[in-house]
Length: 387
Ligand SMILES: Cc1cc2nc3c(=O)[nH]c(=O)nc-3n(C[C@H](O)[C@H](O)[C@H](O)COP(=O)(O)OP(=O)(O)OC[C@H]3O[C@@H](n4cnc5c(N)ncnc54)[C@H](O)[C@@H]3O)c2cc1C
Image (tube, rainbow, N blue to C red; front, top):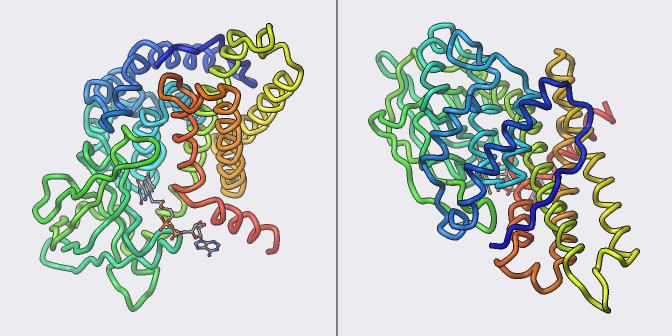
């Protein structure tokens, strides 16, 4: 694939420390990930050495306290990291995103001291996490999940199937949601910390996908999987709350991923239009092309402000759930539109794997689907409006 990257677009309101962090992640992404992006996408296989480097760079425990080997940082820093990695590769970004904003986040908020002391030192060193809520028959209607948890001596036996689980091929620890008492409806849902090696746990088929192809998305099979009492995350019956609240932070991460994808596409297109000549001049000289680029940059900046503001709200301890839904909705729609227009600006070459535009386009689509489809974000926002 040809290198069409160019100078970075301006970024909004970062402190000096945040700028230094962003620059470090950008350099890491450019040197350690970019050379392998095409080959990983083509093979639908992520390089394990890059996952090890995420841990080595301190990108896998951004909000985890330093006593557990984390960086003791903020969701804002996680947002910048995800955005910068996604600017180069959205698949790489989702490894960092799910691990930080879903798995670490849930353990930080709901894990006991003992669970945090047991898992965080490894989750900041080499143990990758996954978040398993969706099932074949329950996606948007997540609380209709059918996976069941039956009480047995010393723990729980989990039976059912999970679907679409990001990081499934490589993760060593899974937050699995199962219903411990169907008579209570969604108030029976409970979260469990399931290790890959637990008896009765298996990773099933890996999906062959349109975009984020190098990110693994797998089925999980639980056949009476024994989970000790010590691995119940949060109170029994509070799993629905854990899922909702964790996904609120997760949506900031998806917003950040979409910012990165749109930035990568726009930078590539901005460089290309200066090089490509038609009618005797660079296509960048046509005002129509200039205005398209200017509109895209403006839309992207608006999306960035929404995502950053939501991260700042979360870090300030203020309510942020509605803003997270808006940021995720708008940034994924914006990325969808920008990456599509970038393909067009590349003309026929945009349709070819010789250039990066088509991959950004494919990678953007997932933003409108996972961690709640656009309709689900609209539903969340509308509920608040009409309350
Ligand atoms: C690549 C990938 C990675 C994923 N990673 C994970 C993961 O790590 N963990 C995990 O738990 N899940 C994961 N998911 C699952 C993802 O969260 C779900 O796919 C998503 O929530 C949508 O659910 P669904 O696919 O069942 O679609 P459905 O819920 O069947 O929705 C289909 C369509 O119907 C619309 N719709 C549904 N209900 C309503 C309604 N009430 N009002 C209006 N419209 C509605 C939706 O907006 C959508 O357009 C992943 C999915 C993908 C594709």
